[in-house]
Image (tube, rainbow, N blue to C red; front, side):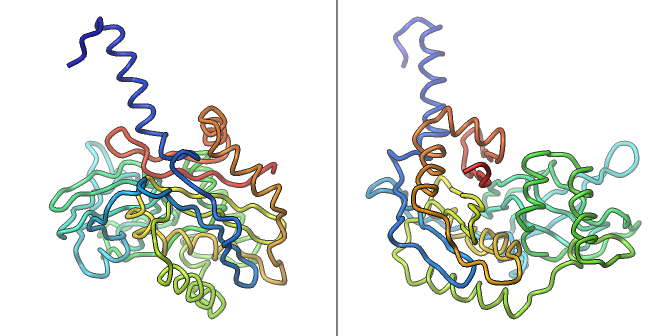
Length: 312
């Protein structure tokens, strides 16, 4: 029980909540393993681990992809009071594990294809309304919904449009841009039609998934690099969340790689400068998240942050 005056109890609680929300995303809790980078062709991952005793124990978690493949989840469009609500779905967890829905997860089918705006958790047996879902197929709205399927993870540019602009118009604009770059068209302008699981993408995924499986775990996330570009950093508040999200997170960066020879060339100084801005100061971290990233909360606590590389 707080024995201080009510005003000071409130302030103390707010500070404690703030630390609980953001404190785990700092050098106090994390270490960046610059000397243990994983590199394959044009992509480099720099692991970021929880310090000894900082990570929590193993829980039972499923990615949205695994939950859908195992038919452990039910996804439905939510009816609106007037017309059709194209921005909302409900997800019911029918498994004995907690499902982690990651920002950037895509679901095809339904009345139109969608991409998840937020990272959140759905405990066993519970249903959650996902209100921030963007359309990635602007010219299809079927009267009768098709069965949903897992569509993979959006690439970095699409995720930036979602995380930074947070507007449906920006999502459609980015999809239009990518169709123009590929000099192609689509009847429904479906983002899912832009990508296929190429042999190149499979080779990248196979390499990094093997490295992850052979590691000792305890990861909070990774810094991603290609050529002279800091692509971004993604961090989770528990290693369990990172484990369940790794495949989808990795796919975002693989899908964003350009063709050609772009070996990672970012200097150690630029890497450290970027990570210092993310981890050394809560004020800088908040500024970067507002400007070029996103923070995702579950029940008031931040469970996932992403900061896209820019200006470093």
